[in-house]
Length: 140
Image (cartoon, rainbow, N blue to C red; front, side):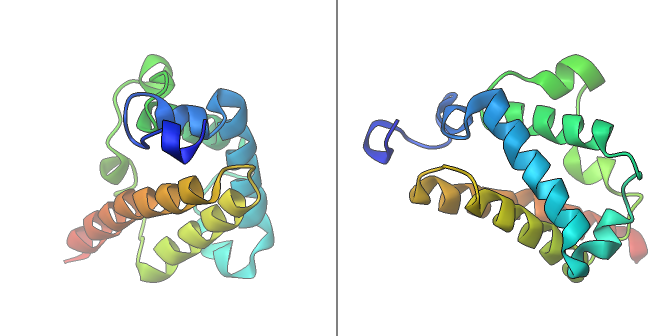
């Protein structure tokens, strides 16, 4: 699938561009590897359990439905509101940027076409910002 034959965000095009479930699993594995290795990500890594098995699965399942593929998160865990599911955490600009940095490094290593990499990172800014807003509102 090329950018000319695909409109991101339409149907399951983004899911397919991400390599479907296998590609999302590879992305998420790389993301969590980055979280373990990037010094600036220690705070967000510490917000997760030591064993990342379930965290990895939840993120893969979320991304699957979010990108237009099967709604695996809903099937296995029920409905999700990303901001609400993170509202118990203190997510400020530093934590949000660390998360996005780890994801950007993971996306860069994927065999995605360059326009899709840009699109994906732009889209991931939205939930990251919403999580930060919910966390900030809770503090006031």
